[in-house]
Image (cartoon, rainbow, N blue to C red; front, side, top):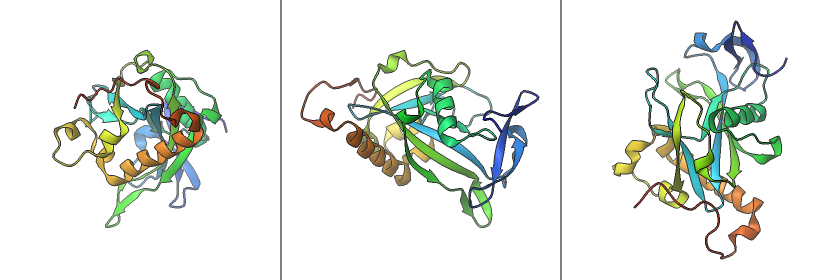
Length: 212
C-alpha cells in the first residue's frame, strides 16, 4: 500500500497495538482515545546549535495556537514509513524538500498511559534535520504554521518552571525527556559535522530569537 492513503479526501492512518504493530486503519477524524497510532516530529537544528521551533498557527481546535512546537510534525499516513512521513511533514510545514539520508533518526517514544487510560495514545518518532540555510527563508504551511523562531539550545535546556519564557512553549517541550532529546540531537549534529566544532567564530545562522 502506498503512503498518504486517503478516503474521500480524508486522511487515513494506521492503527497499531502496544508493540507498535499495524492492526488496522481508521480515518483521522474518527480516532478515539484508545486508538494507538504513529506520528513523527522533526527537530531542526543549525550548525550554531540553535533549535528552530515552529510557531503554531491560530486554529480554533488547537489548544496551543501561537505557541512553540517542534519544527514539523504530524500523523503517519496508512502504509507510510516514519522516515517518509517525516520528509512529507518537513516539506509541507517548512518548505524543505530533503532526501531520506538527510534525516537522522533519534528515537521513538511510546504511548503514555495512566490508570488504564491513554493520556497520549501515540508512538512518536523523532528525526533530526541539520538546517544549513537561513531560517527567514523557510515557508510556513498556510493555515497551520504562523512562523519559526531560533533559540539557543543551551538557553532552552536551562529553562525552569516559572521562567516567563516557558509560557511560549507547549507543555511537552519543557519536560526533561524532551530536553534530553535535544541533547541527543546535539550529539548527532556534532558527529555529523565534526570539523565545524573546531573553535571558529560566526558559524551558521546565529541570530537567536531570545534576547536574554
